[in-house]
Length: 66
Image (cartoon, rainbow, N blue to C red; front, side, top):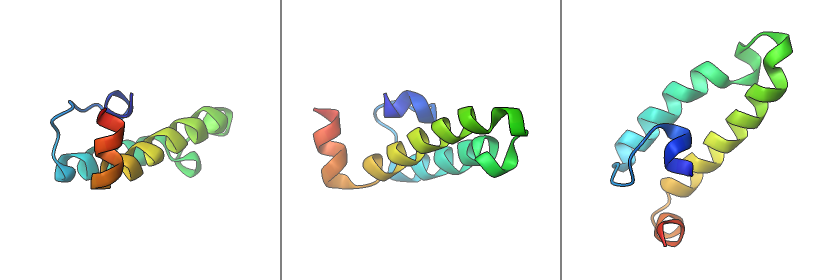
């Protein structure tokens, strides 16, 4: 789930979501990892970015939580 990808619980606030996203993004951004891990990092970065986008948009989060 998006919450698990960011290491959060379902009741996390928008502020917590942004904070968790930034922390994760620093560790898995494809430009910040060793070349042999770029593909894995790119996939993880895509997932956490999608999670951030959905969970910080109130309407999308309501739909996702259903």
